[in-house]
Length: 114
Length: 113
Image (cartoon, rainbow over all chains, first blue to last red; front, side, top):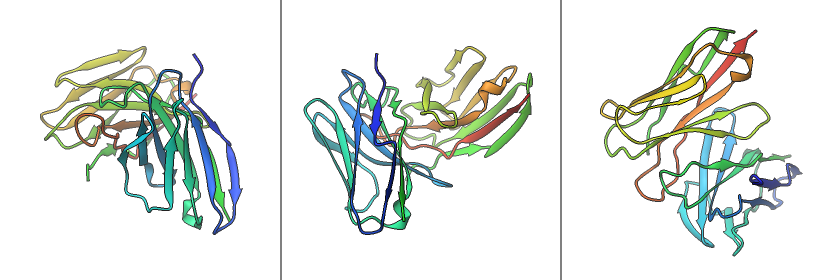
């Protein structure tokens, strides 16, 4: 079974630009969650999509948005990039997003904002 | 905001030593606790999902226990090997149902050969 894939793996952008990250979940998984990891902060939850709907949202500004397609693939968009957005962005898929489902993580996209 | 504490923050042990670390979480409204292992340059990997007070789960040399009444879980590694070097994360869900996980900052384990 193929794992969770994320593209691109590395990205360098400048302040003010926007970026789109992509995540393909494990086949059959309908829940996709996005996390931001910065040094000293740990994994911070951004949002979760299930059946093309945003079901949960973390405490991030509106510059961070996402969507999910009918094949469960998900994209995350960050507009008007700031230096502080430099981070590793991970997506994770699970069958239903239930409290009791383990999540399967992708390799992440390393975003650097200059 | 759910407060999840992990200790110690980092740990260095010799190959062959056994070790353990702690995850503390609010004992009220407990639903589940997830443990993940995150090796450098790899993706976080699920170890256990624990739900019942007194639960003990095992995977090879790694085991975990859960005390929901006092709000803590221990992760044990028996006979540590260099390949056990990783950051170990615990995460309870924010709430019941389909809610996101709240991750602790992790315990970074280094096993010295």
